[in-house]
Length: 267
Picture 1 (cartoon, one colour):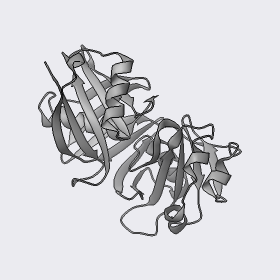
Picture 2 (tube, one colour):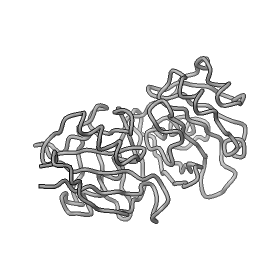
Picture 3 (cartoon, rainbow, N blue to C red):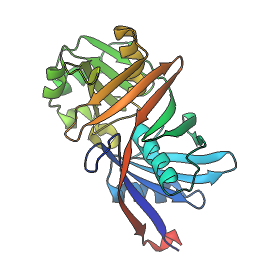
Picture 4 (spheres, one colour):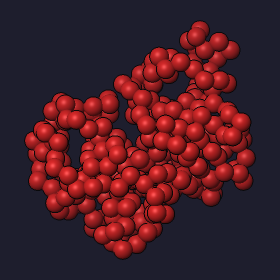
């Protein structure tokens, strides 16, 4: 037997943009070492591993370097694969059991909507070395469950940041979110996301970061439903909607590759 693996561009409606993720739909749970090796081999920001359970699917995410507790774009990619291959009924909600609790996904063609926990950022002092690594002076610094959020004075300032990734990898934080209000009419805010400590210098589009960005900008802009643009070189749009302690993330996805893992350990 071989293991099918899919590569999906998430938070985009066209290939070669958005954020690529690998997806393995497993017949049964696999060991952490095997999953970590597959993620390293794929060398994408995230690889999702899922297997069928009585109440839905178990789901885990790995960067090339480490397992993470929450990932939006790889969850979107996993839901897309299940719906596209008809392994799951598009008329029924998907239920994922994860290290961040139960996550839901539903198809609203051409979109997929994810139900994630909100991870609001509370004001904090910057972790040691952070501002030096980023070479900037933010308007706001806050810390969420996973990441540090920094608001900058403009969209142009967000786009212009060139971090020292080696220095940033030594800062005590999973990831760093930069954000500012957008100057474009088609979206409300922009962001970038850096996570060199887990092997991802700059993530193209980060769903989990929008669980922090959504409550941050909803409070400042006075609206629950917003559109964010992650201003990486690939770029991607994320629709967000605040629902108390939950955030709905809305995006599209495109399969760009299907293949087989030929490692004998797949059998």
